[in-house]
Image (cartoon, rainbow, N blue to C red; front, side, top):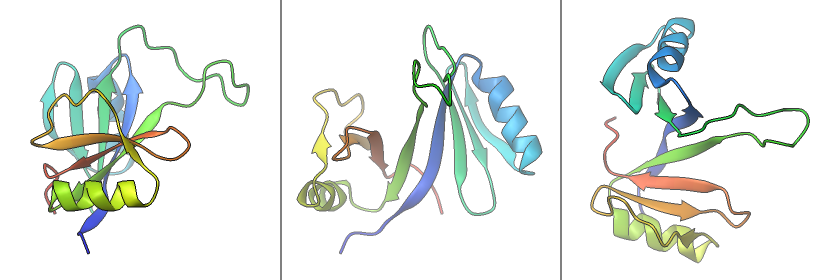
Length: 122
């Protein structure tokens, strides 16, 4: 069986640095990696990432005019095995794969995006 674990939760936003600082401070984590469009916060047992999305609009919860926005990053040791397992359980690979050597973008059976990646350390 492939080694798969929740590696991080990624939050869409318009200001990744500000959002990551909030979560790092609130959860007593550390900013481990930062570029203009992406910031990773290391916590004791997992990571939270903030990802810049052009023309971001926050969710209108509990109304559903603009739905919630996040995706899971699943840490894996073998992309091929993990992808095959996810597909066997009902996931599909997206047609766009920005960096298939390091992560594979998938959709769960309800259409929610998630990524399989070898880039999240223990």
